Length: 117
Image 1: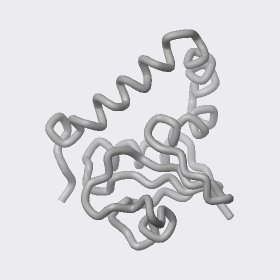
Image 2 (image 1 turned 90 degrees about the vertical axis):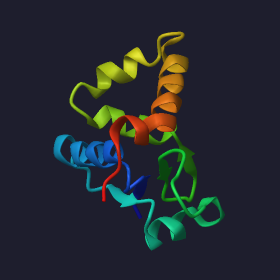
Image 3 (image 1 turned 135 degrees about the vertical axis):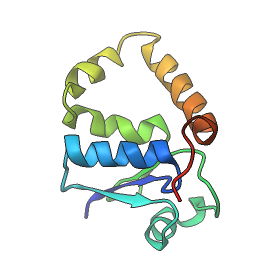
């Protein structure tokens, strides 16, 4: 079984990021699924709520669910320059700032980037 990254399929930023992941770091071990799908509802179970999700989710083969920035961190090393970014995120204060930035962008992503119809 593979990991599943569940992203907001109605968010322009999220869909663009998904396309970038597919182009820059094609990973046959990660399935990319829009939140607004039956597959996402099945994989998330009780975590799934209709409407727009607040964050992205990464579902591991054992059923463990990571949310928000933690959903992307395991995928970073596979990106171009990802190992450097992963090392930078280990510097004190950088990771808390990254979490803050993720929450801020996640909260305002529709007003800043719009939606996909």
